[in-house]
Image 1 (cartoon, rainbow, N blue to C red):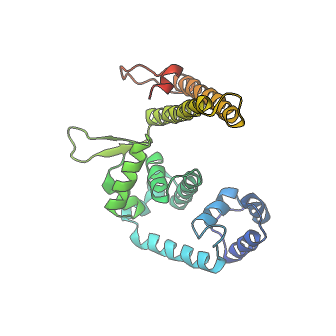
Image 2 (tube, rainbow, N blue to C red; image 1 turned 90 degrees about the vertical axis):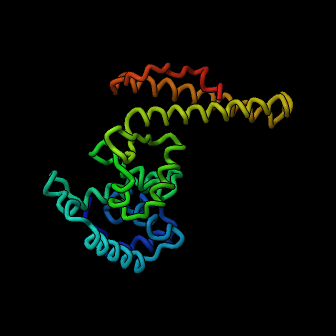
Image 3 (tube, one colour; image 1 turned 180 degrees about the vertical axis):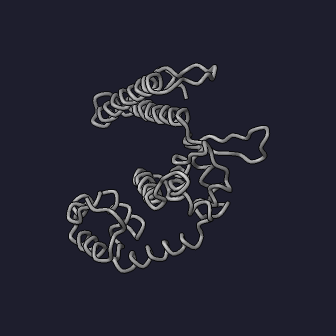
Length: 252
């Protein structure tokens, strides 16, 4: 499978494939490229209905030029400092960001979340995010608030430091999964309420009862799996708080 940056000819082939209604995976096979590369390329350049090869190629050249001009010396020296290919790291971050966007996260929130996920520092400040992503402090603040509301990150202010730092760690990911399970359980609860209102035995009530049963099963399965994974794969933090049980999912 070929690597490196997409050429202008490859971008033209992507445009032809999109016009023919091909899936990203089909276009990727034609070009001998990862599907994630094609997905990222299309998503960041107008989407499947607005993608133009010439505009995408020029935009990529402009972004590469801006990166070379804006990267601070310590960032340009990354490959020498830790043995990583800085360009490969950026490509990986873009792939992760694209995945989050496909799953419903707004672009800026997806970029910030990815940045926190791949950070070696164990947490980043708002200033770190501004510098790394080359975005405004206001954009960082909005993204942080959104991600915190979703339970995807946590913030911490240490006594010896004035600035807050933001983290994505194992416990945050666990808690986010639990929050997702609770949301699914709430769908089950509201669907079940409709059964009595619409009348047992009616088509609508039967549909809602099936939704409730399915959602109940999924929420409780997620909860059990998350707890088992946490116990087996991670050291359990000493929080002093009780873990939620399947019944707790329906209390909120």
